[in-house]
Every structure is written in C-alpha cells, then in structure tokens.
Image 1 (cartoon, helix red, strand yellow):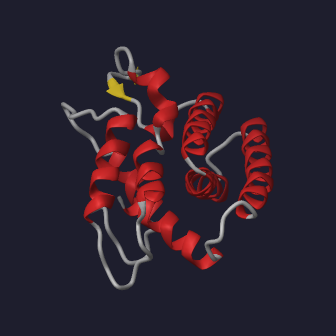
Image 2 (tube, rainbow, N blue to C red):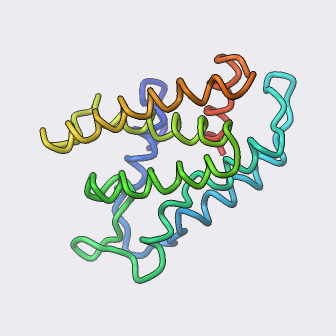
Image 3 (tube, rainbow, N blue to C red):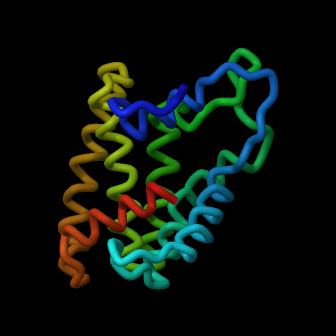
Length: 174
C-alpha cells in the first residue's frame, strides 16, 4: 500500500519507486514532464489560478535537465533501474540546474516554478536525512542559492506568492 493519510506525497512516490518488481516500464524524465504538460492543459477548476501558456510550458520543461541521463541505457544497481531518488547528489543537481535553466529561458514564471519544485524535493530529502554530510551541505547550498534566485525572479513578475505556491502544487500534481 503506497497511500496513507500520514504519508507525504514525496514519501509515497519514493516508496512506489522502490517496490519489488521483476520488470519495469521506464519513462524518461523529459517524457514524463511532457506528459505532465499535457495533463496541465486539461486542468480547469475554479479553485486553481489560470494555467497560461508560460505555466504549462514550465510544467512541460521541468525535467529537461535529465536529457543527459536518458539518452542511453538506464543506470541500474543490483539489476534494478535507478529511481531519480537514487542518483548521486552531484548528478541530481546537474539535472536540476539544467532543468531550471531551460525553464528560465522560457519565462520568469517557468524559472520560479521549476526552482521551487526542486527546492521542495531537496528540502524533503534533507528533512528525511537522505544525504551523507558532504552531500547534505551541497544540497543546502543549492537550496540557499535557489532561494536567492527566486527572490530576484519574483520581482520580474506580478503573481502573488500564494498563486505561485498553488502553481508549484499543480506542477507537482501533474
């Protein structure tokens, strides 16, 4: 059972990534992001802010930095494909930074949403003590740097913070 009322979304995703299996259906991270963008196009609710083309494009691009990894054979450990949770911190940060750069090229809101998406994952991993001390330090540096970048980007757009937080939730839902 993956879902529980006292289990965070990230913990549920991580647990599902580690389920025993004899075979896998693998989806490249950029393909997952493109599908997420397609889902975002279909979302409409009076409880959600408008998902304009910049927001939808951010959702579509949020994992573009993983392209370097998804070109060849999947990385494995003990005969099992690695989850994105299993990558070395250095590789994860490389992918996150590439994704952020691509989203930022598209729009200021894209940069903000994708930065915060990865900050949420990073904060979850730090909170759950997923890193050895050197890697935790690298992640803390990433989080601190991204907080500063977000503050600068927030001045370049007019959306309220509450709306931006909701849009990050939408990205993560999709």
